[in-house]
Each structure stands twice: as C-alpha cells, then as structure tokens.
Length: 289
Length: 304
Image (cartoon, rainbow over all chains, first blue to last red; front, side):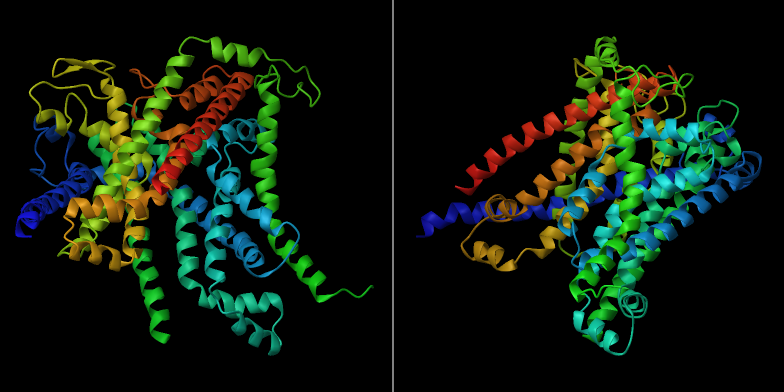
C-alpha cells in the first residue's frame, strides 16, 4: 500500500512546492509586463526631451515638468481633439442606449415575427470585419459630403455597437421578474412607461455596462476616424490626432507621450469607475434579495 | 378599425420597438456589404464613382488584379501566421493568468486592474508606447540589450543563430500582450463557475496539481477556449489598426487588411480595395470552416 502511494505523494509534494514558488513569479511577471509600460508612459510624459535623449534608460525623471501637457493640449490642438472625441463618444452612448433599450426589451419580452432570427443577425454584425464595410461607407460618405463630419462617424459607431448592446441588455431584462411588470400594467402603466419606470431602474448595472461598452468603442476607434476625418484637422479625434502627429519629427516624443496619457486616462478612469459601480449595483440587488 | 387580438398587438409592439435597431443595421451594415460586393465587380475609382450605376459593367478584373499583384500571397501567409500565433499566444497566456489569479491573494485587485489595462487602453496609445519603448535610439528596451534591435523596422534578424522575422514576431507579441486580458476574463469567469466538488474529489483521490489540471479542469474549460479561439481568429484575421500603427505594413508584416487600405487611399482604386476585402472575407470563411471541421472532430474524440 505505502509503496504504491509513496511516489505519487512525493510527486504531489514536489508539484505543490513548485507551484508555490511559480505562482508568485508568474503573477509578478504579469504585473510587470502590463504595469511597467504604462508607468513608463507617465514617466516619459513629465520630462524634457533632452533628458530622454541623454539618458534613455532612466525611468525616474531628473526634473519634472508639465510643459509637455501644456504643449500637447494647446499648441498641438489636443484640447480640440478631446472635445471631438467627447462629442462622438457621448453621442454614441446616448443614441446606442436610446435604440438598444426598446430593441432589447422587444427581444426579451415580446413575441414578434422574426424574433428568433434577430440573434443570428446580431452575431453576424458582431463578427463582421470592419475593413469590408470601410470601403462602401468611405465611398458613400464621400458622395453625400458627410466625410469629415462627426455625424457620419457616430452613425458607424452606433451600428457597430447596437447589436452587441441589444444582446447584453436582453440578457439582463430577462432576469427582471415578469410579475413586477404585470403589477405595473395592472396599475395602469403603458408598455413604454413600464419600461421607463420599472425595467430601467432595475437594470442600472446593465445600463452602465452597456454605456461603458459603447463609450469604449467610440473613444478607442481608429480605422473609421482615419478614413473619414484625416483631411480635416479640426475634426480629429484624440486617437487620430495622436496617430497623425506621431509620425512628425518636429514634435518631441515626450510631448506625444503626454498626448498618450491624455488619450488613455479617460478610458481607464471610466472603465474602473464603472466596474466598481457595476459590482456595487449587483451586490446591492443581492442584499435586497 | 378592426379589433386586434392581444397577440397581434404584442407582435406589432415588438416590431416597432426593434425597428430602430434593424434600420440602422440595415443602412450601415447590410446595404454597405451588398454595395461592397457590387463595387468589387466594377471598375470604380473615386473620380468616376458618380458614373458607375447599379447596372454598370460588371467584371472580374479587380479580382484577377489583386490576386496577381506582387505581395498578395505573402501578405496572406503573413495574415495567417499573425492570426494563428496571436490567437494561440493570447489564449495560452490568458489561461495561465486565469489559473494564477484564481485564488485570492493580497493585492489581487491591483494586479487584476493592471492586467486589464492593455485591453482597455486605446490601440493608438499603446501602439505609440510600444514604438517608443522599442525605438533603436532612445527606447528603454534597447538600453537593456547589448546591441540595439530595430524591432519594428527589421524584417529578418538572427537570434541564437537562427534567422527570425523580427518585425512579424514583434507584432505577434503585441497582439498577445494586448488581447490576453480578453481571454483571461472569459476563462476566469468559467473557472470561478466550476463546481468545486470535482476538484475536491480529485484531491481526495490523490491527484497531483498537474493531474487535476489535465483531467479535471481542462476538460471543463475546453468549450470556452474553443469559443475564444473562434472569436480571436475572426477578429485578428481582419484586424487593421495594430499592424498599421506599429509598422505601417512594412518589414515583412504586411497583412491583407493593410493592403485593402492602401488600395483605397494610396491608389484610390475602390474596385480593387473592395475585391481585396472580399477575398480576405472569403479566406476567413474558408479557414473558419476548416477549423470548425477539425475542431468538431477533436471534440468528439475528447467525448470518448
């Protein structure tokens, strides 16, 4: 008995010991490869370009400066780009929610012709390559003169996000008890006021997640912004602005790094702020039972 | 007004509520797709776009042109290597990450947050960050090396005596780094939903950690990994931003989507760009079918 068990026991002990050492090493490595580049980004953005060229290996700057931020925001026009990105992203979020809330409610609750086929359509749109759509949309917006306007861009972002957000919201709406809605109906609510007064207040975490998704797509998107807006500098989004200025030799790398921070920070803040709200919303619901 | 049943009312309300979704999908996705197919069979440039009608001259010339252009097949091979390697690496690292972060430890929240940033951050910002870090003159990575390496502009290089495609490997590494958090999130969610009884029973039976991973955990993760593989394959195969921003398609990293962009903007050849993008989509579907066939066979074996 003991002979048969003995080798596996030692193998077990060996593996456990190895994992005990390996696990923190792996975690530290992952923390390093994800955290370090962003630390480097911030550190590079607060120093003068001379320092970078003289000491490319140093992480901590000798002299901190915020001139890089002033330069990128005013002289390079990032304030305007920020405004454009904000307009595009907020408009995308609002219209996406406006369209996908009724859509998701319909798919979750109402039996209508083609309800089952709708899922297939959404999956197809989700997986559909943007590069194929880029060509006809580029041509079309050129023809009707919408290229260079932010409206065209918002339209494209909405179309790309709506199928996914309908799907996300539908999953959540299905968890709202039907009896609550029936009670509202008996109290005299119409269908729309039931959605507005009963379903939406119960779905706040899902609405946050959906809005966040739409915001991220719009804020980070690059291909369509490049195709539609590249010729009009005053319409550039932050992503497009950074990508276009990154090629020029006149603008110091540290100034552009400040631009990277300006581009990255809002999305990171929005993501982690709403991630917490999201979990809070979910646990609050659980407490009430 | 004819009286309607409740069921009919419900059907009407459903269609009304879903119609904005359907309309925007139709106008911005379905119709453009059909038009892209039509454009691929016509001789169109931005200059003559207004003369090309619905019933213009249809031709196969664009397809013959894009397939015979120099660099087409190599870009297709690049796309395939980039996609397969990027997909496999991001899922493998995501799996390791999910296993490492499965149990609680001090500081897990901050490590988890750090891991998600590459995926959340805008692609333009992270691509610029990589470009700067890997820059041969002042990039921090090159200060750690004996000899500076032009990671993003060198097509071939020697590593341990072997010729390696430097720039292509770098964009693959970028892809793995940027998308492993995506795989991590999916796999971790699945891991945390697994019933603990099986694992506990295996411990009681004397299974070692690797045995438990191989025989208890992996079989339960198989489906989510297969799904991830399909998703990442589809997204990466047609991806434009990452390669365009890192190398512009130079140094042996040209993928098909960058060619589409160049046909469209640099050469102003709409027909060729559309044809190239359709060719890309067709290859995607073919590879996907091959993969699903291959994988469906594998899963059946797993079942036995």
